[in-house]
Image (cartoon, rainbow, N blue to C red):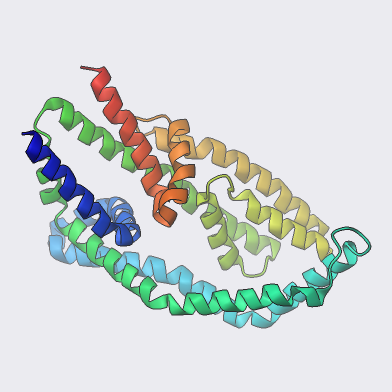
Length: 312
């Protein structure tokens, strides 16, 4: 029996090594699977599981491509204003810090600009890898949605004892809670910030609203960072009223994140949000982007398994 367990552990370790390079698209396929599951269930009753899975997968692709297209369109359409903005900010900063220990010459920024150009070239080279990861995610998402019931049944069959079934159930609730809490907050904050940016006349409103969502997901950062950046810029160009409104909004969003994220997470997750925060911070350090989801799941699952031993 012990020999069999060692073999299974070895095979599992090798499988993890093989899957590690594509762990990010697989994790996000699971995330979108949970998000798209309710719609898939409704559509499957009318058009079949396969067609429904393909439809939801196509919608996810559109959801991913829309902000990307919006950002590219905004950047292309406003390339001149962005360059002017950067030049204006650098010029103002050089004047403000002139004669201090933080003073700098605009020409001294050329190495940084060169580094930025090189980074852009690296990003261009990595585009095929990004496309491949997107394809893997969409394929995994389609198969996950299409075979959701079969996969759930298979996992249930593996967990024969009541204790094991409870672990599976709690981990499932944990994943739903994490997705609801963190991604729900990010989507909500991005949606709320967009009309605010339009009312205030903030340039690149769509782009900045997307960045609000992204920064909401970054551990120890939060959405307030975007409001701070935009507020400082508004102040420097003389829009004092806009700067004050953005400062107030940043405080409100920052405090709301502390309240809303744990509230949404705790609604479904059996693990305390404070414990999940540790995984949310350490996960990206260990697994990159995928760690945003993997970190809390690993920490939360460990707590669930330990609790199962305690209840014996």
